[in-house]
Length: 288
Image (cartoon, rainbow, N blue to C red; front, side, top):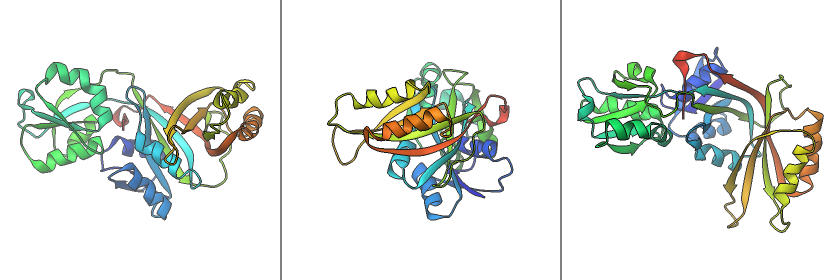
C-alpha cells in the first residue's frame, strides 16, 4: 500500500502515517492537502493521510474542502488523534534575540502565539504549507535571522538547532488526522468507531437541520463534531460535516441515517472507521 501525505518529509502528518500504518514502506510527501488527495484520486497512492482538526486552532480548511468536493469518490477509513508539541528552531549559530521572522503553518502559529509574543515580540510571522516545509526552507536558506516552528524531531532531520521546546499554549493539545481511500464497502466495527456524514439541508424547510439531527438524539447516537462548509453554487447555503460515535452497522445509527435522508437535499456517508487516540508515542507527537 502506497501512502500520500502532507509533506515534506518530517511533517507531523508523516508521524500520523507511521501511527496508522507502522509497516508501510511506501509513503510519498506532497506539498499541499489537495495534492496528497489528488494522488489518491489519480491512483498514484492507495491512501492519503491529511490533518483534519486541531483541538486548539480548529479545523484544517483544505481538508474539509476536499471532503466536500470529492464526497462521492473518497471514504474515511481511519482516524487518529495525537498529542502535539512544538519547538522553535533555526540554523546553527542563530540566537533567540536575533530572530526577526518566524515561519510555520497557520495552526502552529496560532498555538504558539502567546510564547512568541512573550519571547520574540519583534519577530514577524510568515506562513508555510506545513511545519516541515518551514523547517526545510530554513535549512536550505542557511544562516540568517529566520526561525521555524515544527516538531522537535524535525530539527535533527534538517540540521537545525532547537532554540526553545514546548512553546505551545496547551500541553494537552491534540491534532486529528484522517486516512482516506477510494469509495467502497465500510470496514467492520471495531468497538471504537466513528461515522462521518455530509449533509446538505433543504433551505425551504425552516429548522430542517435541527429536525434531522434530532433523529440521532432520539436513537441515543452522540454527535461528536459538526462543521459547516459553504456551498459554492448558492450563497447562504451550507453543507454540514457531522461525526457521530457509532459504526454505521449500529442499528440506531442506520435507522437515523435512513430517516435523515428523507429530510435533506442530500446525505453522503463519508465513512465508518476506527478512531485511535494515541497519547503515548513521545517521539511522534503531531500537528497540522
